[in-house]
Amino acid sequence: MKCLILGGGPAGVAAAKTVRKAKPDADIVIATEEVEAPYMRPLLPDLILGDADAEAILDPQGKDLQEKGIRVDRGRVAVRLDTAGRKVTFADGPEASYEVLLVATGGKPDVPASLRKDSPLIRVFDSWKDSLAIKELAANPGAAVVYGPGFLAIEACRALRKAKKEVVWIQPDLPRIGYPIAGELEASILDEVRNRGARIKEGDDIVEVREKGTDGLIVRTGKGEEIPCAMLVVATERIPSVGFASGSGLAMGTGILVDEFLQTNVYGVYAAGDCAEFKVKGRESRINFGWRSAIRQGQLAGENMAGGRKKFGGKQEDYFWALFGFSLADRVKD
Ligand SMILES: Cc1cc2nc3c(=O)[nH]c(=O)nc-3n(C[C@H](O)[C@H](O)[C@H](O)COP(=O)(O)OP(=O)(O)OC[C@H]3O[C@@H](n4cnc5c(N)ncnc54)[C@H](O)[C@@H]3O)c2cc1C
Image (cartoon, rainbow, N blue to C red; front, side):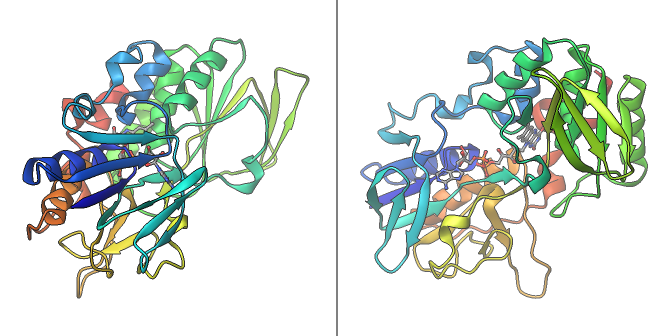
């Protein structure tokens, strides 16, 4: 069996290891954009703070891939999927063919046009590389502006406050896809963020960012305020990274549509993790995002890719809260 997995996050790695268990002779390749060994995104705030070094945030799941005969091709960005020919084209050359495919490409931050500027002082908060750059900038004097609607912005504020930065959080509308905190819980988390010294500008937006000299920015908000700062952290929602699959015949919503078996509408093609959107008859479709959910989906997809017939029954709340024993509510108090 020739098995290709796109994406080396928790879903892709879990799937590869599960296929290996069931099919000792399978040819398994993970092709993924990032060049780092698999790591735990939820610990990126610790990397910014210096509470964890690069080694400490490596994903234990990913440590024995080579010994298990799973090849990982790093730095490979899928740009086209041909489901009829069963092959994937990458930005950098050779195509890869497959008999069974898993799309586990996760999400990418949805960055508004006004913030897509080529400035070293504007940093997206999503990856290992981003977090090291944020850490470096945070060592400079001056305030940090955080921009984003939800949970990732809370995490960015927490890390930057602990790093003793003055923080202004511009919080536009709620996230589009899923927001696991609401009501009283949300209010108490926002209070904690405020109590730790971040100023929150709810319901505002950024309309312009200009450079001020070489080491400063002026952020202009929709309500007309001008905020001078030394860095801008874009902590926006992660939207499924599935552009390469458009035109492939895969049914898509915001993500790639799958049934309870994590199978797409095309035979032999599965999707799991933050890029998979569940479409179950009679119910609204949803993305069950989150670290544990991605692992669970990866395992199930792996079993089904190897011939199983297991159903995924999760909801994001089942997985999101108990990450490494710390809920978001506890983390902001830390
Ligand atoms: C800063 C931060 C903090 C977080 N904290 C928490 C938390 O506390 N709790 C929680 O539950 N979740 C948290 N999350 C979310 C969690 O990390 C994700 O839900 C989880 O990583 C999803 O796993 P995945 O395998 O689906 O995708 P990802 O982890 O996103 O991995 C997908 C991989 O595919 C690669 N890829 C993307 N497009 C392509 C392409 N075209 N070709 C090849 N490769 C591609 C990506 O570069 C990436 O390496 C956090 C996320 C971030 C960014």
